[in-house]
Length: 390
Image 1 (cartoon, rainbow, N blue to C red):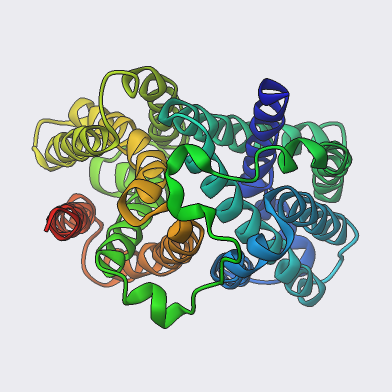
Image 2: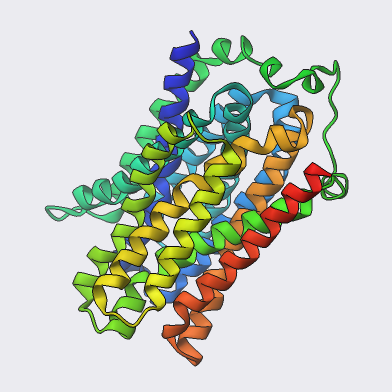
């Protein structure tokens, strides 16, 4: 039963990744149909992101009331409904409305599942599960491409993913008895064994020693990851003079680095602690940023993107997995919820900020921008370790 539930969680993480890359792959077709500027993709993305932040902050209350299994099943069902809503939309305004449940469904399941895995499974599974997210995120554009082949429309791509999510919803509801058998995180200490745990308010969470530091560190990590992925192609084209089609292919090396890195990280966590893995990742990212800064041509720039991807790989899953150890199993769901909210805030705000820098100053500041975010992340994580050691 333990392994069956783990397999279902793996499927859930693939499902989490599937919709994440759909908007980007379908938007070139969508915006012409809606007769809106190409930049309006940012509006849809921000609505989804805001919904995700809200549901992440609510994850502690929802999980305490319903349990991880029900939260996961209901959230995936909500996402499936939103995807079908997208598939039947023929105006930008309607699309914005369906983006609300789209984001609300994603945040709760992300925070709740991450906390469940952090409590019940070894660190290697957290890395491999996030690798599965990468598999889903990579598969999404291929499914959309299949839908558009032979005269199809973008709506079909959303419908196909919606059908997959509905099937997973059915599997998750059938698996609810498996979740109940592992509802007590006994393997993470006795703090979680309180008979009537109460949800923490945002003020109470922020007041926990180390909470502000991990929130800023996670904000920085996701800001760095999202900014790197979003602007890699533009940096290669505008700063290095690489052709647009070649740059698009090379920019994917960053995501390949993350996916391969997380697969490898699962094995490395058998020997190294979460803290050591995070330090390793930060060091590799630093090497990648330096490679981008060095004036040695295109090869170093491409190597830099791969290194940044490899360095990003262990940080997200290891920060999440170490949360119960840093803050206690009884507070981990609340902390992971605000970490998720901080992460999505970073993903929402920082790439557009660099866009303004690229537009009004110079796209060549790309590695400098990434380096400054990295330095702040390192400082905040070190401060967290100092606070927890005190």
